[in-house]
Image (cartoon, rainbow, N blue to C red; front, side, top):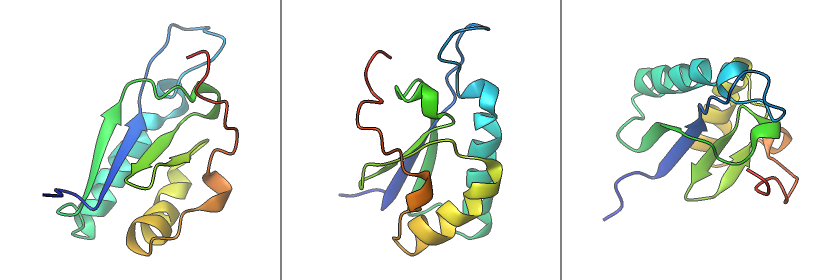
Length: 111
């Protein structure tokens, strides 16, 4: 039985200050998570769409990063201003937001 139609994982990983890869936490990932959850609740979509925080997704250089399942769409450099577009385009209308998709296929290396 499928519980959710879509499941989002938002990286909120925190690395030590000064780490060369940086981290999603210092790039306002928590704000993005909160906005996603708030808007999905307002739109009454939480029955079918779940948002969870995540540890490191291995896309630090593209943070804040989000992965959407089951499509396995990876978004990078997400800002609070992008949340509504992700919701309306991808989550509601099944059209991924191309400009935010991580294009580098090697992003998972050297986590």
